[in-house]
Image (cartoon, rainbow, N blue to C red; front, side):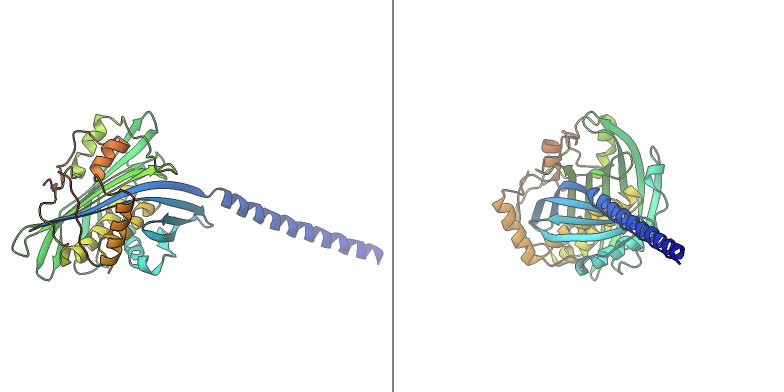
Length: 376
């Protein structure tokens, strides 16, 4: 009897030790996961410009922070905060399933656009350095105003500078596409460039230029959205991207950033531009970002805040608030081109304003106006 009791006690003791070890292992793993939380800082400059029978311009400059929290099953949760523009934006990227989930209600539509478009991806950029390829996105789920398909030509090259080291530059140039309105159509295009680390896990910079032009109201009208996002330190100082060389200067020529914009006659942003026009810019930004990476992670940390900022720039009440914040912070001076030349230092100082997108070059200026939210 004593031997049996001793055996039972020994077995129970072993079981307890085993359970305790498992609990401790899980606790250590959770602690290590928390310790590996990655934090990145970025500055974004987003400009909406319009030329018709007058001119409109609104520019938003903001620092935002991206916190990356690894989860189980190859999932990553992101928390994006920009104190002056929007409350925390969060979502989960499932790398295996290539899906974006757990987003707030206001971003649910754009999460679905990401998830629908990622199904069309054919190539992963990491495996195509030094090559040019084609990529098309099925937009049938986005709405009747947009084309059934959005096509890009992608090129990826390796670049290097003394400060950062080796990087991967990826450029996405869309084919012209038409956006439909009740009274006509608008011819559109987006050009985008990203600078990644060699593993395409970190983003140093992204620049996108969207343009749509129409004569549906009896005169030429052009809506232009430019956005530049650069990695910074916690104080907002951008990463040093000087010295990337002539090959990179030639590579970015076709992006088509506007060098100058002058307000001669202030006007309001017309209805077609602040609704479907800006929705087209939002959709095109998501597609071009996905094309540049060939996946959702990490470009969703740039495209999702971009979509939210465009929405703010098309909303009457929020636009007034944004303009007041810019005035208080002395923001909204030069546009993305001036910032990239003066602060980041990588863009050709001579100015690349042509290429695939026709620049609106009419001096510098500011403008105002109101609008409606660009989200559907």
